[in-house]
Length: 370
Image 1 (cartoon, rainbow, N blue to C red):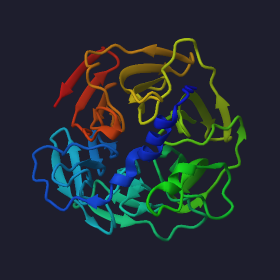
Image 2: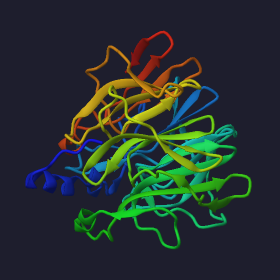
Image 3: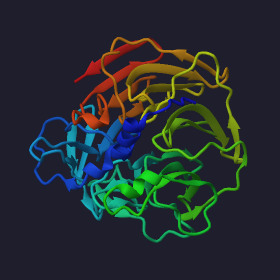
Image 4: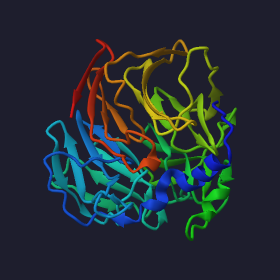
């Protein structure tokens, strides 16, 4: 864990930051007629049949004062041909900080932050259909998660398993811990938000929400962490909790629901949030970028070996390209495609850049396409 004391000025900056979402109250009204995706952060990206799909997030709005613009909710970009598709359907709002995952050719989109706050709506988008049409999944059974963003997800046995996040307090008998963020109620007319360590399962066969009864050493509440599924294990690394950005590593057995905290080796990544953590094989997970307690945007890369509980720095030639709140998707041959994100401190108003990287873990080749 990284724990740096902060003076009063820094604490006031933390209140101002609040993950900087008080600035996000405008949806892009202009048409982005571009040949490549607009710069962005807070977006989602998934891979289906070796095609990467990118949706949402927000960008700088130079003609709108200090306000940023949510990217159009109807736009879906695919890589590597970088083609924009227009999606229809009833996706109600543009958002950032949503959680997106692809299962059997369907993109599932849960939660996020929009102009009026957080949501707990969930949508599906069949990617292999003749046309792209969003469908809200409104007839689900069980108790849904609270409204939040910056959460993580594991996928196993046709189940979506959501963990953590930052948002409103849960209504109803939710299992887990919610930690109220005292600074959140100081922003506009917000009802107040906080961090949680809740686990919610959506069964895609029965369309039912449920919560497991977990055992073991449960991680603290957190948001802007990163999750990775390896076999029957759901890994979570880092994230923000209060004023700390963490470097702890846990996994949960997705069959028995027992938590395990991994010992921290002497050589390991610094604490961070808004990073990516991407499986590249049955034994390796690739960590890239993020944001530290000291507000440093990172460009370091690490490989975590599951069988050895061992971290190794991964050398690459683009250390001058730091990233936070980007996305990273694995390719078919050990690559990791990193797209978008913020290049520096979120408070600086010089934020999102467009970048697609191919990191070949097997041959240590690092390519960039701008």
